[in-house]
Amino acid sequence: MKITILCPHFAPDTAPTGEVITQIVGELEKMGHRIHVITSLPWYRSHAVELEWTGRLISSEKTPWGKITRIHPFASKNRTNLLARAIAFGAFSCVASLVSLFSRRSHAVLAMSPPLTLALAGWIAAKRHKAPLVLNIQDVHPDAAIETGTLTDERLIRLLKRMEIMSYAKADAVTVLSDDLRNRLATRTDSESKLRVIPNFVDTERIQPGNRNNAYRRELGLTDETIVMYAGNVGFSQPLEIVLEAARYMADRDDIVFVINGNGSRRALFEQAAEDLPNVTFMDYQPQERLNEVLAAGDIHLIPLQKGLSSISVPSKLYSILAAGRPVLASVDLGSEIDLVVTRSGAGRTAAAGNTEEFIATLSALIDDPHGRAAAGLEARRFAEEWLSTAAVAETYNELFLELQR
View (cartoon, rainbow, N blue to C red):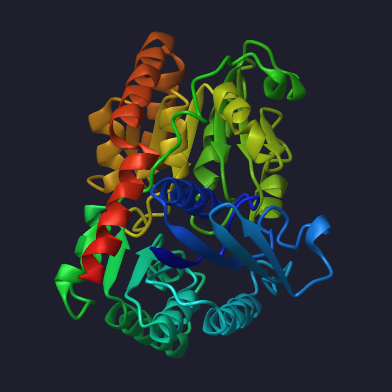
């Protein structure tokens, strides 16, 4: 089968969704499919096209499984300018649509959202190829932007909601990451049967438990200290204020260090807020090949989400942490998919989103229970191996493509 995939990121880009779709393509290749990936030039790390990819609007390359067409993302370095981001997403999606119009015919189209505009590009591609469209929802938009307060203009919200509803209507199937997301979208689709729950996955062969005393820890100048780590995007969805509050509360303990590894629109704000905290260290995104090192160096990994967002998004970094065999503390909506995965798997603990006192108390208990952390790490790895394999998830997509062909 020939498949066209439209996605905002693809290897070597470092975005989590890029890692997800790259692995799916690898598994689909093993099944004998030919694939055309339409994506952006690598830009996620610094919000600008990486140096070796500059100077071009479109880049095309052949692969053993098909072809990759990379398009300039038109990204602005001002990550808080919503208008600039919207224009960039729109421009990228328009060019992606044009590329799909002049591509060889495919039997199925898969488009990832966000951005919402890429869903419409997927519909155009599906019409051109007379093929079914599978819309993969990583985060529900505009809900996420509304919940974080980054989107407040009522007219724009109404426009985006119309785009969202139209996207679901144009798709032949809509895949979501959890039952939470399925329930949230049930009333927004013209047919609830379109909604399919297919979780993200993790490559348990590539990501494995490692030695905590590694090169990354030495770069931090640390030895036996307990590292409490947040690794990921530093944006509006991540309330790292509670992490800094915890660091402030534990500032008199020289055996605990908080590491925030990542970039994003709010990093400068948090760096300024942490200037008087000697137990907080900020690190830039690391190359993908160092992911094992970074995860292994952390003794406790944090997943904080703004209140209300846990039913909108399931961060893929959760699965990477589980595969690395490290305990998790999640500050999320109780009863959400993230809460259930963490608690039922035995991989760690959760605290109610927005409850700073509970978060600090739960973190303190984890820090003071090294044996419990070790047990949680073992359970995390076991869960990842049994439930989150790349091959199983890709096979589910394959079955969906075949079903839609009938």
